[in-house]
Length: 441
Ligand SMILES: NC(=O)c1ccc[n+]([C@@H]2O[C@H](COP(=O)([O-])OP(=O)(O)OC[C@H]3O[C@@H](n4cnc5c(N)ncnc54)[C@H](O)[C@@H]3O)[C@@H](O)[C@H]2O)c1
Image (cartoon, rainbow, N blue to C red; front, side):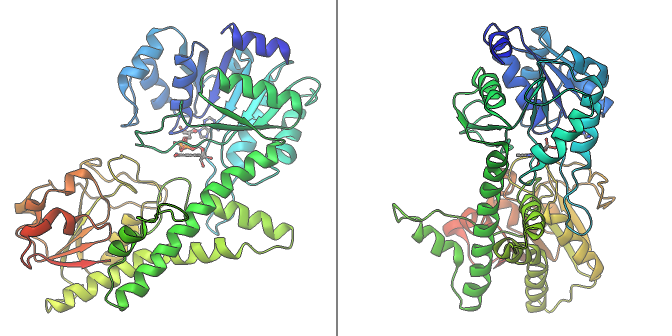
């Protein structure tokens, strides 16, 4: 362990990062910028080639950072997993999706573990970063790594450190967001803390990998439950003729004991819609029910249907049916100003509208073409962001609060706007005189 720490301090340690996605690429860059040599591994050759050319394939990660890292000679990218043997530390940042029945799918972690085991050597540190349920590092990854014949604690070190990446966030970066680390033993925790401490401003060591795994889940369950709470209140207050956004703005003025969460068309992104179910699934093994998680999942999952119901009501008030109406959905991304559409509720809203017989288009400057994903294949291209285009639709549905949609003049010829993010009313401000008709959903 001391040898490993010395290498980190002398900046002679080589760090391998498996998975060069939303988590792995920025993590690699920040370690490289701290003076460490990084090798990025991925199964997608397209990403490896882009990095090697000094290009970024993630919009909020500037290409100049990738170019500088590659130019420094300290960032290499490869699909050749034999190069794992060159690494002193190996960080795993592969996907942890849910299966069709909302069961955890740790197969990427397992297959990555097997690739590492084939090349594992004495003195290496392995850190799992992918979000998962408590026990994965100790009970699943460790035995896979030990098929190498090496023993954890004697021959190699193993830890969990959750990622806290928030794509598009400007006030906190990978470097300034505190990093939690928990090893399967004391030496692993110290080694992992030394590694991250070389690049990040603050490292928080905890007593075990299980605590580190659970910390990440607490953070995400907290968000999922609170978002579900405001989504439920949105529906209740709407029936009472009360605007939930105004209520939140007022409640936010309390200087203590309140934290604002905002309603929306449903959960999106790689984390909040998925991770809580990892814990719910694992809790069942212990004879426990994760009731808050299930309830929050139920409420949040229902939101796209609620939005479509509000669109139908709005069209009805114009004497129109959903069937045959032209509807424009603004935003495919799951959150404002990013090019990340994973688990975005916009897809479900579009598909529900199509099922009901509407002719649907979308507009998202971050997605000129709707990509084919594992679950969706819209076969659509974005329409332009301009008032003439918007005016051609019977209803315009704001699903993502991109800055591009905040210009009031865009809506001047639109008859009905269904706003799920409270963007259009503030944009229209005082100049608004009843057109477009605005429905908050
Ligand atoms: N995106 C976020 O904001 C975020 C935040 C916190 C935690 N996480 C967690 O981090 C993990 C990774 O998420 P992400 O957003 O970076 O996913 P991602 O899909 O952007 O990246 C994963 C990368 O792993 C690669 N990959 C898949 N299988 C592989 C294999 N066998 N070997 C090597 N590479 C492989 C993929 O090609 C992809 O480039 C997940 O567990 C996620 O829950 C994500």
